[in-house]
Length: 343
Image (tube, rainbow, N blue to C red):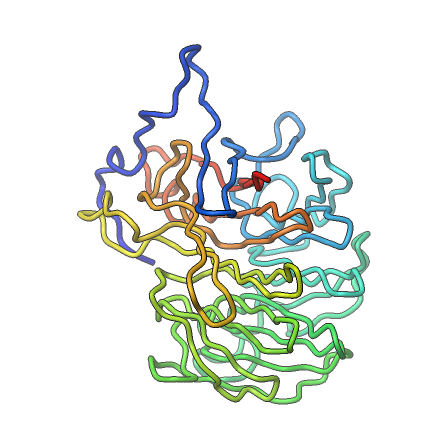
């Protein structure tokens, strides 16, 4: 985690984007055909007294319902595309929510990096399978599952399960659909096939695995056997991944953290932001070019990202961990934004 200075007023000022009536105007971000209207404050209709505290991850199912895994009042919140709550569950089940994945069959995978487990549930919250033993992490950097895992991806062709094991390991584990470990790959480092916080994973329509190697500022691409293929550079701290097939073409959406230090807190084009790429790693558009902050049009720490069938983007941010918890007094910040595509 990058150390920030105590001069929070630089990153959290709120000037600009204010209408004549004192209300915040809609902010438009993006480039070309990828332009978006931002939701502004935390998206979604939470009940009175509820808070995300921080939304750590977001996923979209086949009905465009939005699944939010968070560290607040209720860890699992399901909303329709308008932000109306459909279901909630999970109170008391999780130590430190980290990521949510909707499998092709509609079941839900939740990663708890507090107790080093991966759990599979029905959409209604019935536990179907658990990988890992709660509160019994493998030794750090042992390569054995798990020590603070980060994300799950499911191969839509055969149901194979991939788990990135990233905060205290530098490994990717592949399982059968019923939870049998097949093999693992990766180690700590900066060379091809090595990782420095292996944080997210997504699979394209041809079966290639895209892995967000966060602190190495890149995305690495592997085949289903863990063989290194290539990598995308020119990124900030690549933390979150989502791949959407658009007109028979895969498009890669990347959520990136700020890549700087407190004295450079108003540096431009260093993240946090969303980058949109093709599968050759060529930049199509960037969404957000200013530094971190709570003012409209900025991000804090995009930790999870999802794209629905209409092309709208949902961004979950660990704003409290990276920023709010360091403020005096601590402050819960916006952590869930919707970016509505402008057609």
